[in-house]
Length: 380
Image (cartoon, rainbow, N blue to C red; front, side, top):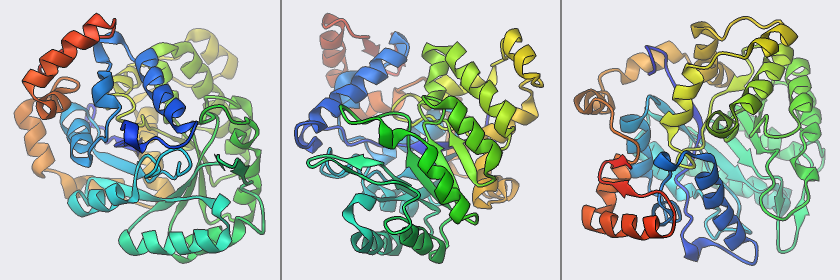
């Protein structure tokens, strides 16, 4: 919690960015691009060394980072199906199973689907994953695959509507789709948001989550929030603008608040793409610039509004009683460990897992290469 407010991180990722996991011609480029984005967007003192980041990140390290080094209370894991770029899709279904088995009160899971495989295979895939994680809460799509390049539209009645019907039959609440940020050298068109609207209109009992909302197509996204009660904006990666380009974040937030109101925005960081505490603190202390307040006639970003974005909106979207859920985890092992440690410095967990001797050698290598060096337990 931050100042007594529950925090749900709406997208978390224990990536498998090991060299052996990258696939084909584009996979290695995307693997490198992920680290370049991390190192470019995060302050030097809070960048993870390359050898940590470009590895098979573990569920245990992710949860320790979230629950011991940040104010995040609940993590939402998205199983990723970048199957044409990474052998395990980047965030595997096995990690989803592990997360729910080991941390059922502190996590929720979206299953990962690839509609480019066709309806029959996608439905079988959904059922197989649902059997492994029967309490999953949603599904996650990527809009394209490569080798060969293929894509789909969310509003295609033949290719997608049978999948939504099965999602609904299984009691899943949300269809999340990666938009706005192309994965490597691929066409931009599938990353636009207009195809979400037809799906939302045809399936009003499902919620549709635009992931990376605000990174591009801000106006279009805001208009969709205004027109469709079941369309939501997920701020994964968009939240990182607070670290690198805070004015851009403010402009996206103000536009969406004006058109969609305060109930349609979902907080997310994509940890461990970044450290989850960094943008969270920036958002908690954020005040909109005066010209944006005047332009959109917005109320202050007060405690109640931030509480909605940081947790209540996601809970309402999926039908969870947030107060009851927080009561159920109060005083659990994570609470006791967090209270005992008093909040660990960023990347303390990773440092402990890597070992001090390895860490010191790695820090010297990183410093020599011009990257940020680290000491045990805290960045330097």
